[in-house]
Amino acid sequence: MAAALKARHLEKGTLLVISAKHGQSPVDTSRYKKNGPPNDPASILSACLTASETSDLGPTEDDVALIWLKSSCNVATEVAALEAASPLTNNIAGLGEIFSGPSLGLYYNAGDSRAPDILVTPNIGVTYSNSGKKQAEHGGFAKDDTNVIMLVSNPSFKSKTVTSRSKPRRSPRRF
Image (cartoon, rainbow, N blue to C red; front, side, top):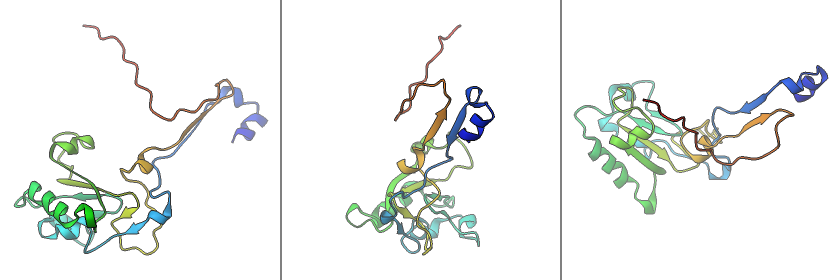
């Protein structure tokens, strides 16, 4: 792209921005662990899943597990069931973090009716799939997925590498 812009004498007036929608987890494919029934969160909580999660489409799982519960089930009880099924010493479900209640606010707006009751982010390299073909997943909430490259290029820019977000500048408030 840069060579084509230069050949047309457009490089000085063009800003190139190259980025990705998300990362690719796991980057190190040796960490990949397929994990489907009976050890995935939806299987562990199968008695409490809503009809939409038990239909032909199946549960909303892959590189994360989004779990919607029947109204007759208690979220705290089901989170405890996940934790009991996957103690730290033998984490068969590959659980990384479990979000429910107020902690879902990290990912969803409060009161959003589309938000799941429970969100499970697995350990890096775990996907909730029985696929023997997968080597990586298209992106979830892991650091490998959310920290993606962004390249900004223009001949008038001084070269530098930024490895973390800058704090946004705030305009003074006027009343």
